[in-house]
Length: 198
Image 1 (spheres, rainbow, N blue to C red):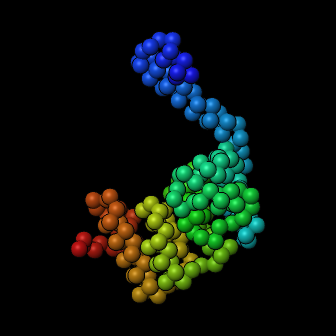
Image 2: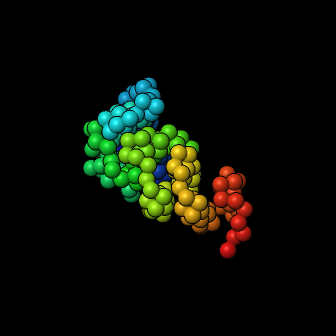
Image 3: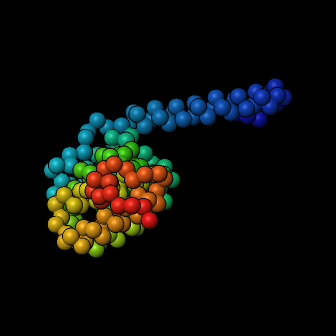
């Protein structure tokens, strides 16, 4: 089409304008297709008690986002391979929390909405030890808000020793200081106390 416009007009401005309009049209068609495929079914996370229930909730989240292609989802995160995205949409549940979070984020679930999803994960796979939770915080490589949500949900029911709790809080403090925040966010300040920046 661009070659046709270039041949007819001989003007690069018309080609750029045509390319801009064509790009907008392609994106609008893709959005319309997603909206058409979008489901109104909300994932029922309260009733998740086993792998099948979690799988069903994941597929509902995917359908609610408009059933995006595995390739599109994989491009949104380096932790979500295309094959894993496809496997989840066909009924498998990831065993890796990074892939779980990446899939949810590819389905449009924001960091503040991850808490019920973490609770469902813990109900299905059990609560981690404090040591494993610390490893997860260090390796999840999610956004600061997602990590904070994970830690709060973990600490809700877990009863780690004061030493383990402080270790988790220290990791979160390092993440807060290493992030783009110029000051420790208020909710973390409540969780970790007011410690001076090293």
